[in-house]
Amino acid sequence: MKLGVSIQSTGLRRDAGLEERKKYLAGFKDLQEYLKFLKSNGINSIEIRKYKVQDAFEDFQKAVEAIWEKDMEITIHGEVAGSPSSGKWFSDFYPSLLPILEQFGSYQPKLIIPIHAYQSTSLETSVLKEDTINLFNKWISFIQSEELNVNFALENNRQKSVNDPCDHLEGVLEIVNEVNSPHLGICWDMGHYRSNLTHDLKDSKNGNVQDAFFDKVVHTHIHGLNEQRVTHFPIGDHGSLPLEEYVSALKRVDYNGVYNLEFSFGRWAEEVDVQRELSRSIERLNHAVEA
Image 1: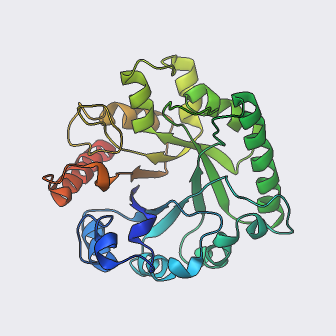
Image 2: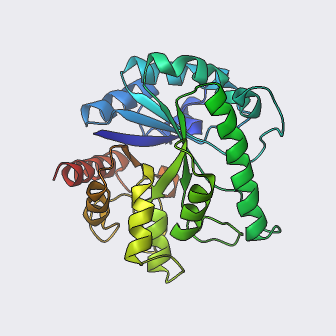
């Protein structure tokens, strides 16, 4: 069993100021102290959120090394935007990943890259869906030829004021089935799914669709909704997220990936004790997974 926590990229970058980084490190004085706290609470995986195609690895190098030195694994919240259209290697399409691709095998057996589909305010959803399928087919052909143990995890999104082929379970499932590769699974964002349901937006309550979706889940993003139904808040109680129900659904399909908490501390009220709420959320996740 792996429990994970996302750290927003600003908290990991060497070119960000100390006070700015602390906002994304739950108020801890530096990354080392934050990792020590997380590991003592059972966290063994850290997700970089997000790690863009053209980011400079040098800005993240010390953070990545610190995570691996703590015997923790990394996952990479990737992006589709900005990827070059041609190249000889997968790293040509995602240049910022090259140093990680060269090193991760010494620290962990595989690399999971959760990622959103193309989104747009102008292009039709059908076009975005086709573009996403074509991109994954291209990337996966290189992954296979280079024998890289990399798996992409296509994420379901909440519905927003953009066209998005993956803003509901069926849309994600259709793309994953169309690509039909062991290198592409699903990242189930439980908070996004819950947001759609609580806002009475389209998303599947159909048991057959849910079962097919859950069966292809290889990664998770877990966060609650606040009283205004805004996402990326703590999961301290059932009202924020029916966590136990969702974890049980994954257990039924023998899910063995990371249960990854994904919070946005900047959205929380200033009077919130971030470290306390983070601890409560980790404790609840532990209990749900171990039940």
